Length: 432
RNA sequence: GGAGAGGUGGCCGAGUGGUUGAAGGCACAGGUUUGCUAAACCUGCGUAGGGGUAAAACCCUACCGGGGGUUCGAAUCCCCCUCUCUCCGCCA
Image (cartoon, rainbow, N blue to C red):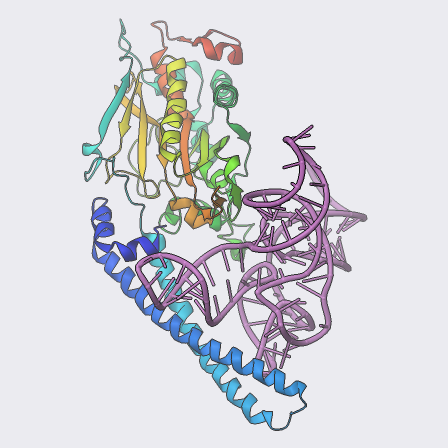
């Protein structure tokens, strides 16, 4: 959520910065108009309330003196005033509701280091690690490898839950589990994150807090209890562990000396992918459920961007240690996610696809999420400030899985296991 | 699911419908004392919104889990919801 005071003070700047993300400038005008009428109503209502409070106080004082009968007319007058106040308050809360709704629909402002551009074409590759591995044979795609080695049973996955749901089997299931353990251990032991294991369903407040709602409600799976429609919308399957973990301290006031808070969490991620039907239906690249290890940081505004770079390094480390070729992309204004001020995507090379796959997205949301969550910290100067909230995948598993098996496949159809995973998998090679 | 008890400021914890934004304590900040530490003492210390100011000061409004209601006036009375705890039942 944007800082309303900022928008009020610098409307032109706000318009310009949001325009670079494709937000129509008149959205700001509408916002300011609603805000102005709200403030007008509020001032009127508060003036009336002040009058009523004074009158009530006076009635109380006179009743103590014993005057009761004469006060009836006065009471009636104040009662009438109360009715007026009630009507005005209804108007105020209506204005507040529409102001809030408008505010919740606006995306974050891009950081000044983010390149301007409409879409992915304007993104900038800022770093490349390694190079595509060389093969003496035509590398197979992950679907073929999964089928021949029985790592994933696509047909039965679809039988159980529909297309876009994966049934890992045998070595595939073990590799998935090994990756989860490996990633958590790396971030806990090497990078100093505190491991948490969150609920996989959250309430709507959490979804609003991270910026998923109200705008992306249709991308989520809403659950209900049995056929009790009244419970629908009370909980949602999480699209990422960011939803529960970033909200851990929602509504709290942290001490500055406990920052930065660093959490990592494994969770499955559930995404309806509404509107994405037809693309990438086969395979593991775009699915409705996948595993991910997520990194979350809560930091002071001074440290926010240093932490962003650090977190990006933590995600890159995964791919470096596994010996995978990847590149880091700085997203342009038009491609940056709703809640983010600055985002790096990390894309790993998948030789069988002949393309890069996004396995991580590392973002600083600045105070966009903390304002929505009313998450604050008490600064050393004494005031309550909004911290920066960062999130990054460390990393998404299904696509990492794809890159791994495609990269380490051998001509005989077996797959070599990179050294860091061997202790977890207790083998150096997967073969049929 | 059933029964009961409870949700008050960063934390603990008082609170008779009317100067209670809220006693007291802890924590915290500043000060006095002190060889240092500790202790003691003094002072200060909620949040949000609106108005106001060059910036302050200052003024107003709201907030005692959330939402309604009663009343001239609600932390305090009534109703609904929610969460926590204890006991019972069911269950991985």
